[in-house]
Image (cartoon, rainbow, N blue to C red):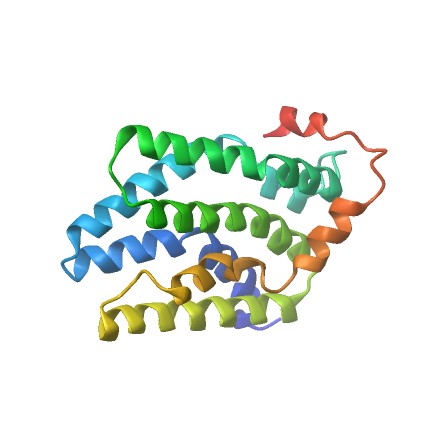
Length: 195
């Protein structure tokens, strides 16, 4: 296995988890400090809620040390993604004056990242390097185009921003949906003990 192949899944996971942070840094370095601060507020609220219910899911799936299946984790996240997103929205609105569009797009991105984390981990367990290569390439292109557009057009609030927000699930959604639709004989709530 080449060094690049070995790095594909860490790169895929990083592109999923750190894209908002990279966006925040970009705006901070380009002098848009108010926008960077707004992004930081939403990101802080989103991480507080979603990471509290993510815990070590990725490690458990990679190690195979749990009796809880990928399907159970997928159903848990699929069922709770909207209520958690709503909780983040109300948390943001209660503590700041961040524009609604920015809040909603960043929450959408975090919700999608939360689901995509399972997809990337599932493909890593399956050693699907082609998926990881496509995932990293897609995330890199979309993020780069978003930054170039912002730098040239000086406009973040557009359709490209929404496209960036949903991009983590543009490929691989079928794996999540297949697991989500699997027989519901497995209970969802045991997942809570492992988060």
